[in-house]
Amino acid sequence: MKVLLINGSPKEKGCTYTALLEISKTLQEEGVDSEIYNIGNSPIAPCRACGACGKLGRCAIDDEVNELLERLNEFDGIIIGSPVHYASASGGTVAFLDRLFYANARAGKADLRMKPGSAIASARRAGTTATIDELNKYFQIHQMPIISGRYWNMVHGQTPDDVKKDLEGLQNMRFLARNMAYYLKCIEAGKNAGIKLPKQEEVTFTNFIQ
Image 1 (cartoon, rainbow, N blue to C red):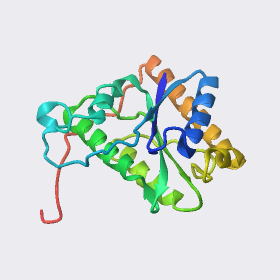
Image 2: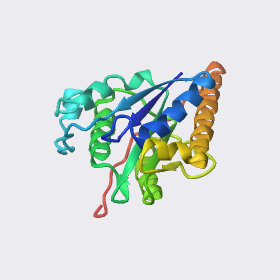
Image 3: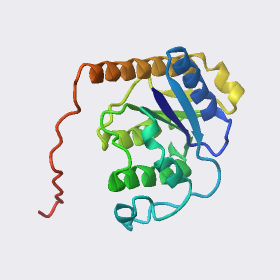
Image 4: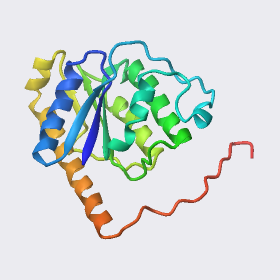
């Protein structure tokens, strides 16, 4: 079992990384592997809404998004972490995830149904709950159960050293990690017992006109 930890901060080892590292350590204690994937600080183009991913089997913009797209099947769960920028996830995080999830859905690279997901946010002071709500929507639209901690999944601090002093925030990262590990083990037990994924219907598309 392996969990993908996406670091949406432009700072490779900043506050968001510090929170994800706490999750990674706890997952390891629970016998679950993880990998922290840094989006980085290079410019990330937004989705062009061209729809070419359905034909190409990848995003038409050939960059790091396609690299991770090819690897999604390696992971049994996904945790997205982002700093708070203007009460929302960082622009790089949103651009990256828009294209990653959309291209995967259109190209059919990985079946994300029932794979658990979770979102965490780091901030100096505020905007965290709005950011978490924003990030959780990527999971909700792809039939991915959302794993919670015992409080909102956030840490506070201006620097990584500040985050290390947020004892409640870091504790909640550990709650989250243990809950994720538990859910993954339940999925594994279900597979071994012959339990199959829910039946899928052909998707119906409508709009507000018809």
